[in-house]
Image: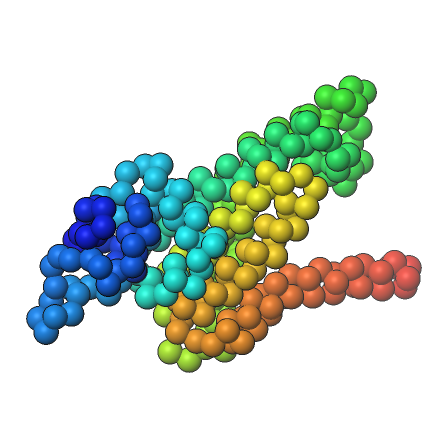
Length: 253
């Protein structure tokens, strides 16, 4: 543990104090032989047992979103991903809650999961049109943990496949999972009506690329290439499926 000289808070997050933001150079505490710190791991406040809840959640969100370079640098990428996954689920549910709030106050007319499935299956919903939109939004909200976990599994596997291809000396799959979990912070920008989703999406990509760069000790170009290929693969498969369907219909089969 290290103690911040400025505010006296003890923390294992060595790059800066999670309470006052003081740089690590002013910390004092246990040090290894030769004057070096006992550890150089940049532990997120969310994983620091000395930082109470919800301060650890707020501080981790703030630093991961607005200071991604410092946040991801020298992170504990080989530690178990249980705590990062919990953080990811909490932020995902919070973002879904904000989206549900704005969807109720400012309805956009976009169909939810229920309406989309009903249209695909050609099933008529009840005549209560107003209630149908609300039902779809509620369904989206309650399915958030399921979709979040499914996305995390697929995105982690896809990203890591291309990391394996493009990045020599990469770390394990755990590092990729941790990166995606801590890059989810911009989802909270759903509180901004209309443009919040676009802002969250673009900034989430930026954080993911920075996180991959630091997690796998590679360049920004390789990290972005891995993300781009992982994002393009599902689109390419979808387009291929559409083309195959069109070809079958055109051939009369």
